[in-house]
Amino acid sequence: MDFRIFTEPQQGATYDDLLRVARTAEDAGYDAFFRSDHYLKMGSVSGLPGPTDAWVTLAGLARETSRIRLGTLMTAATFRYPGPLAIQVAQVDEMSGGRVEFGLGAGWFETEHANYGIPFPDVAERFDRYAEQLAVITGLWRTPVGETFSFDGEHYRLTDSPALPKPVRAGGPPVLIGGRGAKRTPALAAQYAAEFNLPFADPATAVRQFERVEAACAAIGRDPKEIIRSAALVLCVGRDEAEVTRRAAVIGREVPELRENGLAGTVAEAVDKLGAWRERTGISRIYLQVLDLADLDHVELVATEVMPQFA
Image (tube, rainbow, N blue to C red; front, top):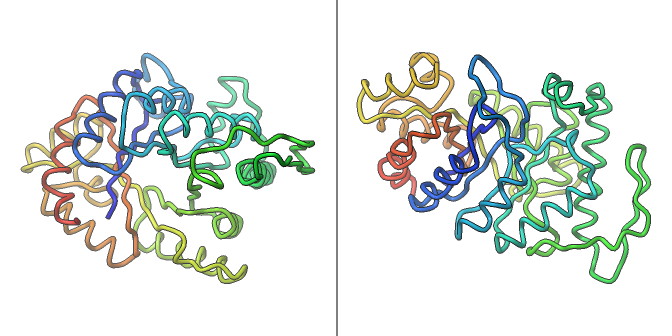
């Protein structure tokens, strides 16, 4: 199983905070460092000193790390035009030596759009734009050098684009799609995704959604085994109950709730729960949501005590 660190910087983090976590994760042997793409904090935290941009952050990390893969869960399609976004991601990919993975979602948090002057269409239009963005971005990356790319959609129109620059990997970075949508999300995953992610769900929900993705793949003649299954769970693991309780208090959560909905408890509990998740859902990749970015020991504990049992 691949182990990845997932951060939520809008809750209150500087670039240096993220760099420390990314370097710790890289040194500890994690497969990847991911971050959210939000401009507004959630819940009762202060969010200070304020949001950081996902792709600016990843550009910096691309130059200050050497092995760990980098990406977003998920870049919001509402935040950026697809042509410039394709350029940004390709550039960060080049800066990292080909370590970028590209998660793209439709966008959902209406308040942050209002706060920062970003249009927020209704859900049908957001998904229409999302589908067109996937077509444009992957189309630009897959266009051979020396040829041009054009696209005539309802929301985006490109005419004779040189489709440059190219990412390091031919065809572009792996595309991640996720979420619980019953129809359009699985269909888009079948068409574009190298990985499908279920964030903060229970195993039964994950199984149902993975089955929908499988059905969507069958409908277009794609082998569903080509799509990696992954999940994201909030992390709260300790060497003993006192450490679990302390870590839960720092992030403002209750231990029983975390045990039910996240990866929480002792090391043995975490190993058992991940094993059950893997057996029931077929996931081969887990994103651990780390909410206390100052607690680097937490990251290292999982690396030394949990990860080796899934090697």
